[in-house]
Length: 257
Image (cartoon, rainbow, N blue to C red; front, side, top):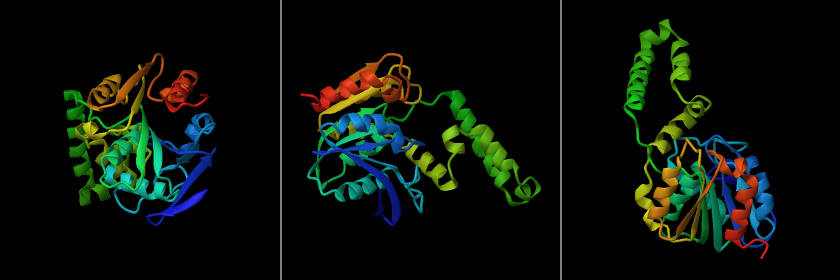
């Protein structure tokens, strides 16, 4: 299915019936990764999964968005379904958007429950090694972007970026790379205390992208939150330990009662 939001063509899917649950995927992902979870939740709810702008089959933003822009987009998207209350489920980047969205004033709907899965939003502690790497990259980028140097070595900048950048960064377009940098560097820790909806935090114990310590910090700062850590799971805990994950979600959402 498709809908136009902010002059962008947005791909989404709907399953089930009942109150609305919206599934927000992580960076570099798409709605397909939520297929199994959507099937489980649709036993009791209307489940809406979507491709964020710039991912899957949705159009890319026409300018460099920040987390607030994605949150504002989500409000407009949710309003298309004319629901008075919603449950929000977000993995990684999707969780980051939910945290920001939950802090927006005068929402046209109420947030009944939240599930944050290996959520982003806490700025990682940077090691000296990381800071040195970033400094070298910025210096090299400035040098190889300089007009005469760029003409002499036209492919060097791209090769340098591929060598120094993360896979998420390298696989993105120029616009999406700038969005990634802008979103990753925004710390949302101070917003956690404002989340009032009952919040379930699910983490993979071996998550290296957003470590368990992030989940523990969120549990401490969100007023009505509980953390479940899944053994043997990584950043995609909902895929790595799908059976256990689904049981936990069903219990939290009252599915099967």
